Image (cartoon, rainbow, N blue to C red; front, side, top):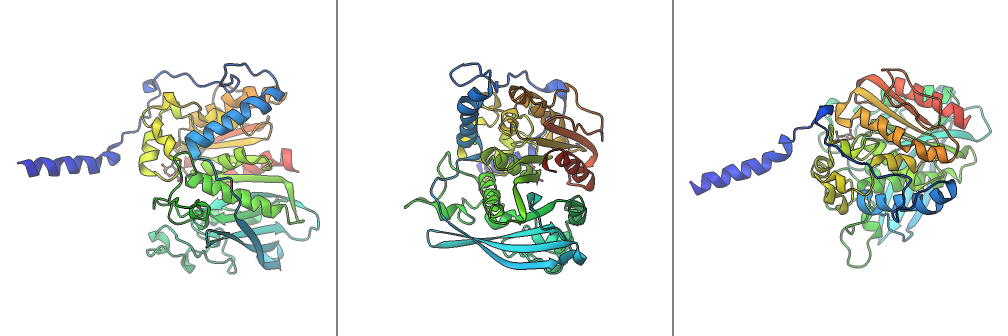
Length: 423
Ligand code: GCU
């Protein structure tokens, strides 16, 4: 009998994460009060840009660092940019292609991330660039046969026959629909891509692989409670790409837009918050821990994300599992960290898990910070109609029909928005 009870208990424990029942009913959202972007930790009301930049912004940034994503260690490690490949007439003459090995060294370990860049051919001036991560390797974003195959750990995927966590030829170009490279080039922008697994493979190994160990202090074997999880590590990689752009005179480093989809949209927002050199920030369906307000508890919740992806955030973030009201921040404060820079938030109707309304509201509730700068944020109180982008102020937004994905439609809106600021 005892054994049967034990087996039953083990079965229940094992089943419990899968049994998480997301709420999708607006009427079941508990009442909540959001922390105020414009009231400081000392209860001081922030009324101007100076107070925002000197007092409140640093406070909010620090709270996200220590309580959510985790602080990137201060110590510098060696980072080298090796420009290995330059092709003047890539993509049938449409692009200049560059492939750069970013080599990180620390604690007698080395890590390499491949940076792929396409710039519009036939230009000699510095161009604006979009930079973002892909999920399966740079070689998946375009059929170009000369893009290096990713060499680090890849998630298995039966559609492209990956079963040994290694990139293969079959997967070349299989994510072309997410990265319409030729279209982006034709609109006058460059596009830069990295594979996020080069910086930190996306599974929980207690931070033994990836970039973290290069930073460990003597005797340290995993990040401290407040230190970086994987999202912060990926943001660090984007910051390093930005450092490269500053060395490349064909890239206008004052006009770099950082973009990401889903977990990588959480990452682009965090990178944009950390590094104000990013001139424009784009979140595509970033959901929980991205643009969506955590306190709404619609779709994915803090407790759920920390259970299924324990390596994404820092350990402190676990304090808020099923305890969102205790969070000293919410995600409208992350959006506010972009101010006065333009930010675009995109949602999809078929993606309730990411809480489109919560993503919209984060934009709306961050607008008072844009007001301090005399800039229009997202002033609308109600969500726009489907496929009717808001592209007027410094915060853009759309909700499109269709599923959780990064599509040509999304890109068209991002480019239209970027044209107002980066052209
Ligand atoms: C999961 C996860 C989300 C994440 C998404 C993605 O659905 O729960 O938080 O955004 O994966 O990255 O595709």
